[in-house]
Image (cartoon, rainbow, N blue to C red; front, side, top):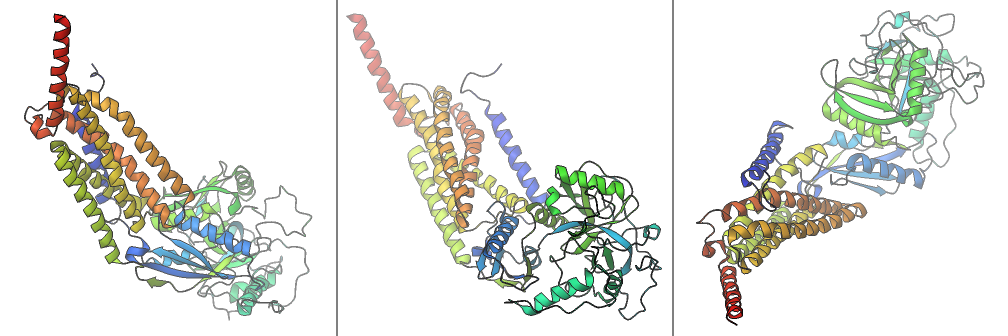
Length: 596
């Protein structure tokens, strides 16, 4: 039988709270790297600064629109929820990224163009160690390089997962794959084995970078099979790739895998614009698939081995393209190319329907998560060169952190003194509730740092200090309503359920207003103000958890104890005397009426 309105079973609520705390701290200590400390923001622990410089094929000044779009995309990548404490600002034609901590490689990776494409593999991959001075391989009647004598390790794709082998490894069974020239745009082959000289770029930002890109395109994206042969021999996989993020999707590509172990010759993604003979439904040579066809990307455990994979979910049209391409290229290899580098190159074992695939390899969880987020948020409109990562010292330092903690401690102490002086036993319950609220908040901060990259800065600490008042206000509403019930002549025990029912709505309304204010501030604010709004809103929600699962049950338990319900101890003595006087006055008036 359910208890009357306002009557509860305190042990049940307290047990629920204990289970929540145990679950939170189990996650804190059993997950992650064992650290039980929240992440700190740039202003408290310092960070890493990387400058990105735009690199364009023509060497011209990047447009304002492209730079602003790149800045917005990078900001979403690094600070999607606005609580990681990262900053992305424009400095002329450069973008300056500052992230908390000392993850220099992660900071550099934020400037990744993230242009994804699926290209058919032509012929056999060449080991990266092949010297550039060796004789050119014999050519087939079609004029392309014949299959090299050694085949690299194998992988396959015949399920919705298109790759299940270490990343950067080429496809197997390519010896059975006919050597064919990359689809040509129809231009007459050049007899020279070296790229033609390119004109200097007008009004260059960096003429050297622009010329490197143009020369690499002329050699490694030529429509002449002999030039591609030469490119495969000359390509040095140990050097930085000038075509990173600048390759032409309508032309063939000679490139390396991500690990620099093999060189690939790849077909165009799309038919050349001047090619009018290829039908729109011809997927024999052209996948027509890019990152724009991806609807979502997520990091997951590798179902076929150790490590992690990145699962890709295509949009409706992308799923149709993927099914058509895999159907037309069974037993052929397809390379997953990110910014001009081959991430994996599985062999298609059968047509793959369902609109999904995966990029597999020796990814760590962090690498797979970063790649998934990068692909999910889209490619940058520009490619960038990153500077060496610089470690920057805290902008405010530990002294500011200590000052913030001291301010919070003083505020808590004043609240404790007031509660003890004014509420006595109820004040002790208030202090206990605040302490337990702090225990929950600390665990949540640690977990949020791991899950969404939340970093605690001074603005966030200010949000928690403000929330102390909101939490204490909930207790005061309940206790004052309890005093009102006692003044009306009720005992402590009978007053608790009635006071809770009447104060509960007020507490919910007040916290709802505070949460809405924090949510609106979070949506419209930028920078560290978002952190302030986030912590304020989070503390408001946790306040309700503590009031409902801790404060109310503890007061109910105290009201059932003869010792704790003593008016002089509970802090309700004054209200009890007013209640007795109220009863005496009411009784006197009733007697007078009866005598009359």
